[in-house]
Image 1 (cartoon, each protein chain N blue to C red):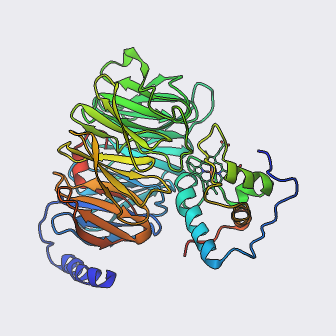
Image 2: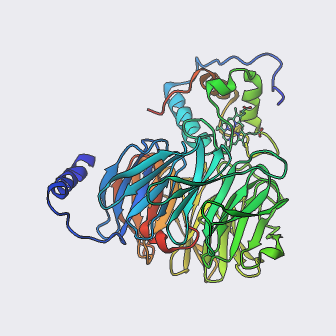
Image 3: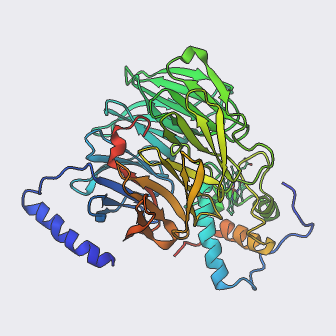
Length: 101
Length: 390
């Protein structure tokens, strides 16, 4: 649970294309959903709802997504997701994740 | 496409509503889960068609099915704790309850009277009357550590038993259901870290739980409980160089073919062929990605394998006699599941991101049919009704 950078990561999404956002939404709902539930209400992994994440620092969550949590089934996604994309995902998770359609 | 498919169905079901419905069996039918829309379709393997869509089953993002022994009713276990009994002849929901907060799968007792559901939240197993879905028994999964645990790998077993694993506690429990209201529990503790799924061999003898936190599988001989749980296939699992696991393999799909089992190696691009009696490794076959399901053709000649993200556009066919991959198919993005027709002359694949079911001839590998389906996942044919552990 160590943040990767010392400055808080802002969800800078200005450069994220609409198309890429759609891909990420699909990835989160489907592929993260296989462990966290497609509605993100939890499964083998914990719930990723705004309620569940509201008190957790974004930087730590971003780091979890990129690096995974060794010793648990949570895998690292840094081969598929950039840091700013992870920032956008965390921001969206904390505010209410968009639907696939 | 969908409209043209449903229109004749509508006519058919309207006919069925006012006249005596045409008599038919259900042995060539099945159900596919449409995970995003909370619906299922009823499938016909004789005509390679969809007969109906049934809606209103809740969150099916991780759903599985057990069949009543008459092959008429499908019990659908949904992610949201929903348990839905679908009448596949009348093509409608017979009964539906929300039995828990978050569930992972279920099983039906050998005599067909009890349906059990494995729950993550609240961790435990609930047992229902297969007829009216009234609660018969509640088994909270409190491990030796005093904490409630998620339950995985629930199967039925001969001797009127259910067997399941406690993910957080690392235990395997055998519930004897002879007195359904008072299950007798036989608990095995310290079986290994994080059992993530379990399976039973097709003869009903061995229960094996895959371990995420350790190498190998935890193996229980159900003919000899006194021998306790042993560790087997220590080579199996995330030995050596570990790759991240993007999707948990499913052990229910472990192919048991005569005296061999074929298992996806966790975190590796390999499947393992093991001897079903000694549980020793026979061979390791390199494959295209991390295997999720390894499903044997009913004759045991081939095993069809699908893969986790990012290789989930691929399916490979393992020829068992030569122990080699004889075919690599690219059916489309998001191949989530595969199911053989009862005698194996067809194999049906759900291709989630393409919103299609693809049907292949496993002899020629030719595609012999396509059906539209919304985000299809599990495909379950009624022949499962008569197989131990499904």
